Length: 165
Image (cartoon, rainbow, N blue to C red; front, side, top):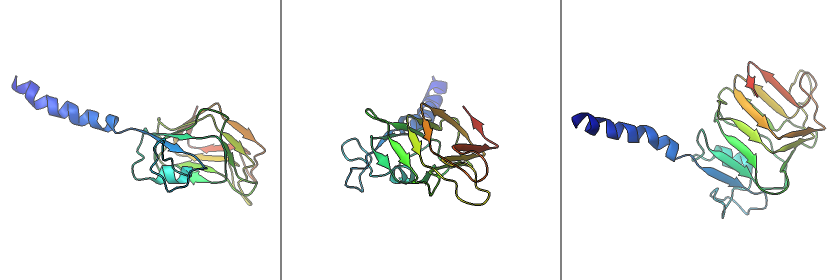
């Protein structure tokens, strides 16, 4: 009986981080700053990713629309997915890369149902026109890469010391 009493709090404490994982919502038509709920979404992916409440394992659901932004996962292992309806488009207008996953993307990092359009890694020896992955793990599913380019390697996506699927 004493053993059960000692281990029950430990089991609950270890399960607590799983309970805190959430879905955060993004809609470019939101007035902002938003709270990330379905009723009060964040206006950008950058806001959702950098929100102090977004933790490893969380999902960021992106509403349809064309997003003119670039972002990093800030060392977090997140799932970024397109919401119901038309596929969200991440657009670089040919002047920037939009997504960096470096030094921290773990097995929970997933990018699902997004279109990356007109990404450009810049000038010189830049790689990864739309996405640059380094020293991280990431899964890409049901994503489209259109009209992306790089001056060096990986017109759409470049990975160095990375595990992609």
